[in-house]
Length: 91
Image (cartoon, rainbow, N blue to C red; front, top):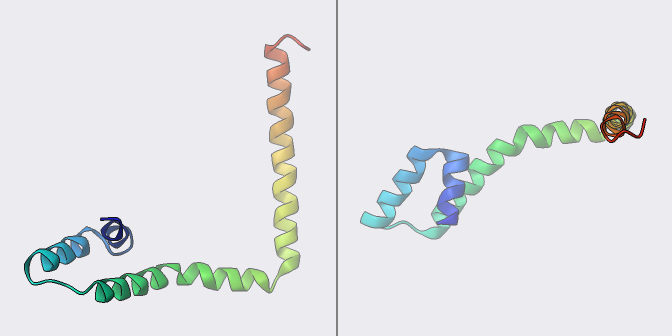
């Protein structure tokens, strides 16, 4: 059942129903289903892997994104803390 959930996630509802029909009627090898699913997962994740390789080759950019994100998070946290203190009557 869990494997079919992954089939639906990566290959769609139609493909899941197709595998269910094969299983119930003529049979399907588990290894064939796993190979098809592995290929679909690889295809789905390929753009992410490509982007990861690009980012690995640009550590300066990654450090800047992390720095910018930390600054933004700090500002949001500061604002939230101020709001909490005001509502608690501390300031």
